[in-house]
Image (cartoon, rainbow, N blue to C red; front, side, top):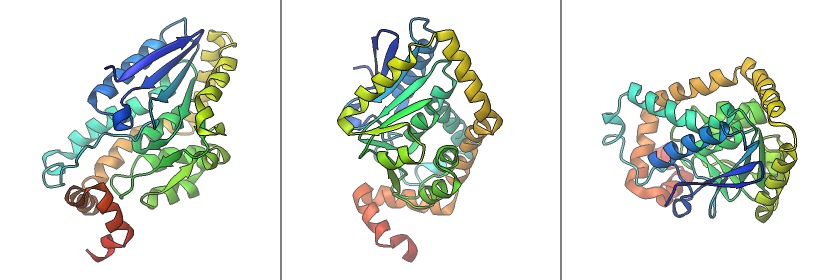
Length: 272
């Protein structure tokens, strides 16, 4: 089974994340296939607009962490430099929609969590479900990536709140109200609305669309958006070396996600 499928109707192509049994969590193969497909569609003169969506019950829950290793068995065998190199690749892929030369519409339903939130955050346009959860990690693990990039859409105060509070999230309706998304519709109408938006955009000649995207992105770049993306890998690699992060990873490995969430909610991290 392909981890990424492509569907095309007219000048609109859909990139479909296709690991529905894993809620489209990104593993090595999905990262590679997704990056390759985006590059191919970005260079295809028959495509004017790209929609990115997820198959099944979710857009994507971010990294496929599987059963986490403890800090002792995991981070201790990865240097900060190795972690930085790994994170730079992940961020490059998650944010690749920013550099695709033609407009990208993110169609977000169900759950959009962790690193996967960078896809709609970096896309040109986003349509989200009213009840969709745009979520930060349920435990304070990592943390140098989502908050800084979210500031460009929702402002520093809300971005900091979401970053500082484990298990925080926005609904799709709130995300649209705050400017993180263009539209919020019922979850079963997300793809229909995204196709309608993409179809209207695709009426503009492709060469004009590419110039318009370069002009708009140039403003974000001048505001420091690309430097922020580049810095995220360093901040995340640094936080992975912190004692607090190691403790959280160990607890997650020991208890599993459900029990670790309950432990944290009950204030376990304050008494350990």
